[in-house]
Image 1 (cartoon, rainbow, N blue to C red):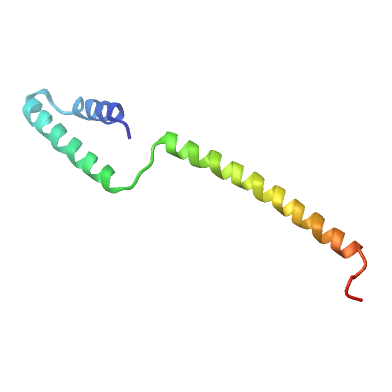
Image 2: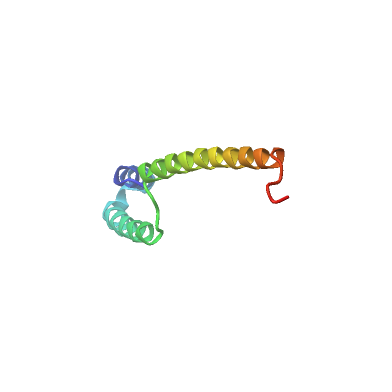
Length: 87
């Protein structure tokens, strides 16, 4: 979660509190932000960019695996079609 998202969340949340709790609102927002940031830092989250890099790497790996599987199938087919050399 980005800092802007956290700020927007707390602005929306604090707008729900009555005006006479303004000081409590500021203190609560500060404490909740700190708690959220601490929680997120322990969660081993990745950024969208890191996720996209991993998706691209997985896609390329999958394509290579499919190419290799096709080549193995082709070689197995050739082996089955050729006469056995050991006889």
